[in-house]
Length: 158
Image (cartoon, rainbow, N blue to C red):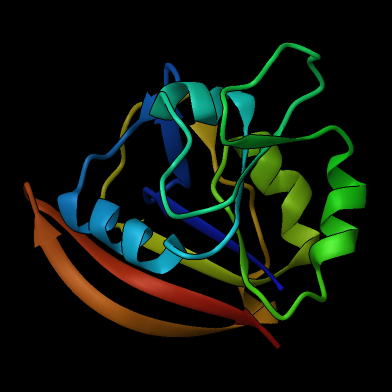
């Protein structure tokens, strides 16, 4: 099963200059707790922004480039074939960004774990638009940090 995990602002802001727009410790903790022990897929730029493969997870990186990836990373050259292959797996595979990977993965995802931040910010990368009517939304937790109010929400495809 494919799930997407992201933190987004009011206007679906994700990132700016290959970094996150919002820095919320509880969001990082939620991400770690939710994805640890599961395979994750990200784009090459996202891997570069993190700086290393994430521990305790099988790291897949979608890249058209033939450049070598760091040790501990499995390359994915055909994103759609990979997503089709894993969409019915019993194990949850988490899509971790960036924007292109989110957009291309959205049709395959059964769950969206979104940290919805009640703020706007300058961004150059946005989460793709999606039809919220096609999902059931469950609030996992509400919080506030650094004058930012947020909710951890899980959207499940109906």
